[in-house]
Image (cartoon, rainbow, N blue to C red; front, top):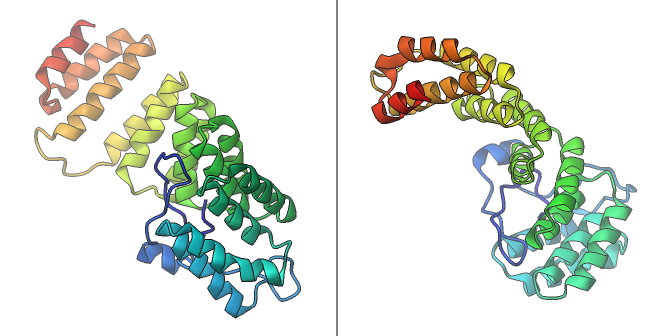
Length: 269
């Protein structure tokens, strides 16, 4: 992935996909621009003019101007031929211009030279994911998340891959980490419950849903979204073998479930 401190989820494509401009929140967290965050003498260091060149390479990548990006990144490598983050950027440009063999060589070399940079692992993951090598991409995303623990964009990408690969225990762990980071986002509670359900952790899923439902205030009457959550809760109870409790729950929540067809089907399941 292009070396951004708070990268966004990349769509599938034949070449590593571009990223949209960072949000104001990302900028506030230091994710809008490339910053080495190290002192002069560190292998990752770039002097300010070259850090600006690196930023230009990022912009070129985002706008799919890969040849322009190659020209922008080259001065960084002239300054330090072993600069890991510059090597992976050059590599992803090569991968995006049908020079994948050379591109992967550069990316792997960049990872080797700066193994503790979440940027190099994220770029490697993007290249692998673009080539549909999802298992290896998953490993790279995990490594990137171990280094940059609070990056929501990294975590969301890892979450999507875990679900795609049916690594449901990993899926639960990632969704828990996302929820800890954004506990006020309603969708994160539901996503965790779904992950727990897929991992056959029905008791945990029920507990998550109970907490979520109790947490809500002033839910409008006949709210469709909330009704779907209640139907899902009933499904979890059914899959857990708690049939009587499932029927009791449906009876208690009947007035809040809008989809009467689904309600009737669930009661007769």
